[in-house]
Length: 318
Image (tube, rainbow, N blue to C red; front, side, top):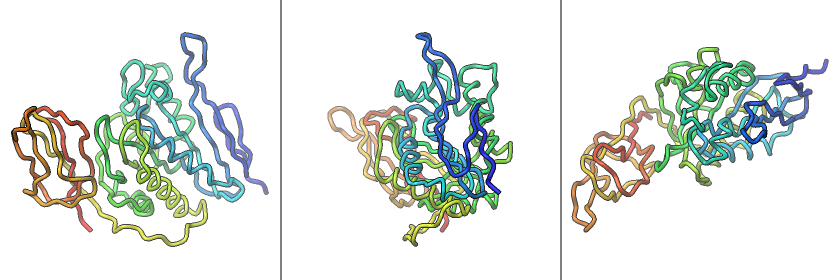
């Protein structure tokens, strides 16, 4: 018996096929329509329904390339289950190269949304109704905020056994037990029963090979773990580190920053991470680690003010 077609928007995708779908969002003042672009890969054989999403923040472009490379290598005739791929969730922000929507709202603080609310709320509602409600697992791809960089990492509820299994299957170097944020996609999806991984890597408005390759390989490992695709030949994964506590080392003075550490570096409390100088090069203050751990994020800003976040350190267990 043939597998039932997959309904999304006003279309149905037959089993063993892939189809691009446009979910209407709004109309521009010029009269043009704005839609949410979705690729549905509906496998010939039954299996889980999984979504992958990128660019909830419009300047976080790495997810777009991760998803492009992922779906380019999938054959719907060989997939078991269904993959719903949404490379750009914040379409208007993405077109403008801006983290936020035109009304300056953060889409990832607007879930689960409302069909009659703000633009952000309407997009969130559309995504929940047409994507999340149809899926049991989601992988949401993010990058660091503007002028910051993140080490490839998974953030998830590691206390939930099923979510933890998925996080371990992804195979990122670090997995962080992350608290939920009000209005986030992850919180809203968990409330309706979906298991969610948040993949963080790289910088805003910039591609980098390591972040993209880690993301593509990790998602494919999760799909293989769910028996949706065949597993890759055994690869050498780094020892996975788990973190239950992370914190930023912050500037204690204003100055020009010279960092002496890098993403992925292991540090001990008291280690020198860099220094701040004035415009004549005179040293203002040294920067030291306040804990043992691994550097999972850092600023790229050369000029910092007192209180600015400089280096993000995760305390880890093997």
